[in-house]
Image 1 (cartoon, one colour):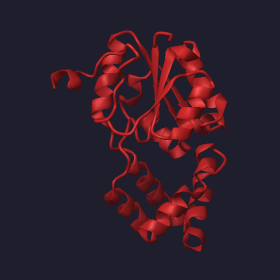
Image 2 (spheres, rainbow, N blue to C red; image 1 turned 135 degrees about the vertical axis):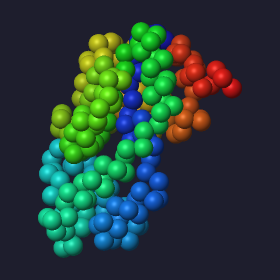
Image 3 (cartoon, rainbow, N blue to C red; image 1 turned 180 degrees about the vertical axis):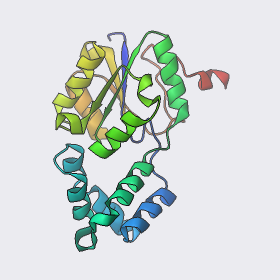
Length: 207
C-alpha cells in the first residue's frame, strides 16, 4: 500500500454535522411545508442543483411547486445555508495535525453554488485546505470519476497516495474505482484512520 500523502474530505456529514431536526424544521417552516414532505422535495432534484445545472429559483420552484414565490428566495437560500454551518471542530483539529505533519488536504463535495460561495466567503474556512473541488464549478458530481480526478490533481499526488472520507457508500465506491482509497465516515466517535500511517487525532491520544 502506498503511503498516504493527502487526505480529501467530503463536506456535508464529515466537515460539518448532518442537520438536526430543529434545523430542518426551521427551513421547512420557511418553505411552508410539513417537514417530511419538505425533506423529500428538497432531495428530489438535488443532483442537478449540485451540478450547477439549476439556478436557485429553478431549484426552489421545483421544491415548492405552486407555493413558490420569488420574494421568499433569499430566506430559503439562507435557511439552506444554515442547514450546513455546524462545523465539527474535532475534525478541523485533526486537519491541523495532518498539515503540521506535511500532508496535503482538500475538500471534495457535491454542493450548489449558493453554498459553495458561502464557504468561500467564510473567513478562515478554506485556509485549512490546499485544494477545493466543488461539483457546481465542474458540472459533475460524485460518484462520477472526473470529480475525484480533479481533487487528486489538486493535491498533486497519485491516486493511491490520497485517502478520501465520505459519508455515502456510493461515493466511497466511486473513489475506490479511480484508484483512491476511501473510508466510509459515519461519526467522529466511530472514525479511525489506523492502518494508513496518519497522525492519531490528539483527542484520541488524551483518552
